[in-house]
Length: 215
Image 1: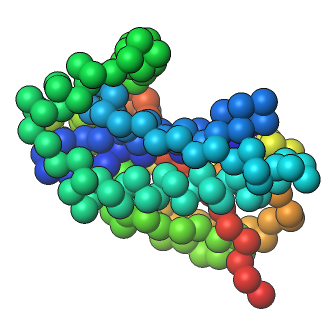
Image 2 (image 1 turned 120 degrees about the vertical axis):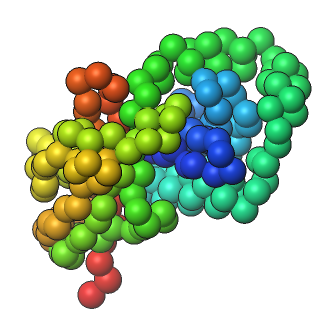
């Protein structure tokens, strides 16, 4: 099973949490959940059983996951889920028992109020490239920037130990500017992991697939 994606999207005064994961070869499905305030707003499922008839292709499934995840983020930003609180409650009240149980698990999992976002949404990362990013740490409830949040930026792989690329703390506005180089990577699946931790606010992370640079 491939490492999933988690992104908080701020839009129209709300924070939408988007979670995409691969359910695995025994349940070949990519599932994206959208929730607001710990309550499930929508779920998107894509079956890929026809894609693995000749074997499980991790690179292909990872690409499908990223495409589905980014599409949902675009849908949020273009207003697909622009509903008022009463409408959201009506949507949630129509969930079946499985969704209610899942909603409870999500609500108890994501209790931390720390949210991480990059200045530029939809960024793509490639190996053998120089990178400059600004990480924003803010409070899920108040949207205020959180100073003194520790930020770690790493490369993750199934085959090697995590490699630290950059670390530091957010400034008074809750921003951390980082410059680093993603090295040339051998074939495989690599993830850029951005972690944040504040002793009083909690923890958060965002992940991006690192793509191979075309030669």
